[in-house]
Length: 399
Image (cartoon, rainbow, N blue to C red; front, side):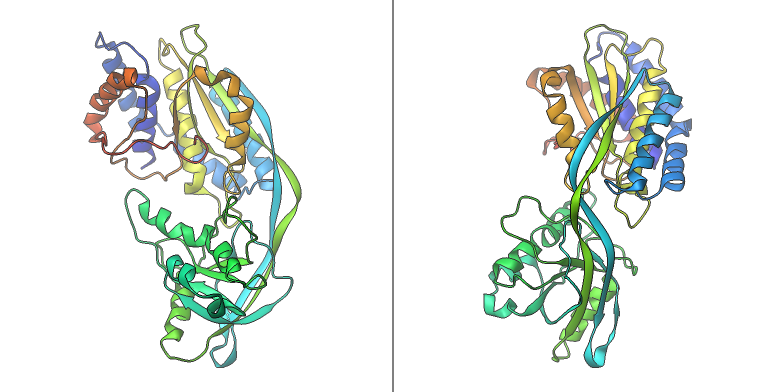
């Protein structure tokens, strides 16, 4: 799976801006395809990052360890330059979390605090009021929510392009604020975990940083726990939950964007920028989100740089800091490099998993459209068509 995604990154890098008057580019790309299908660099990088570093939430010890890991491995891959750029942000910490049904139904629920959530200040107990989706919560009267724990049970639908995630994630990002505006300022917002699996592991994620007002203490349930809770409402009896979240913002922290660059064969100072975010949530090793993006883009840049001659333009790989808790690395990079944006010819971010690539989209200037058509031709042997119905959005950090 990683190989197919790697091929796309390689093609974007090698094909960008080269002359189409000769067959040299096509030959070069075909050679890269053959090499990439056999190359194990991305896999070895991912294996190393997830086993030797592991979880790396922004501002944590694991985060600092991952920065040292990234610099060392970029240097080992032979990047011409490797440097770090500091990123400052509010520090959010997760200490402990616990939830359980109370009364005759008493049993423990699988729960995890959402990123950015305030703590409960000790155990809080309340009757649960059930909403099928965020719209139902928005339509509720304050009297319905007041004094209760809001629970949204909407399930994420599986979709190839991730639209199901975008729709359901609103309950996580906006739900705590919507419930608070109903007058439940001292209450909790309980939402179903955003994901399509069915194990006992709840998914964390960040609440909105732009929604007006103050959020409620917020947590996500695993799918089995959410189904248990939703099923109890069918019995017609009141449902109560006790929740204790020890989490919240605690001062500020510093991390770093890790940047590596391979020179091009030309001398115009232009380059292609690719990358992913180096941080992960604290509940896992971040293999998919976004260890694969880190590995894919580093390995792709190395394959392109090994060409003789190299492409005219250089390749810059940016491993962004603390995307999960507010896209702070992407914002810091944009501010630090605002004066050289014209040197960034095209960008590609890898932060949507490592499965087989099924299409690609673009968003370029009109005069660059022929290059995208050329890229479409180069990708055709891999059965990766151009989606002409939607523009590329880049991703969180590139955005």
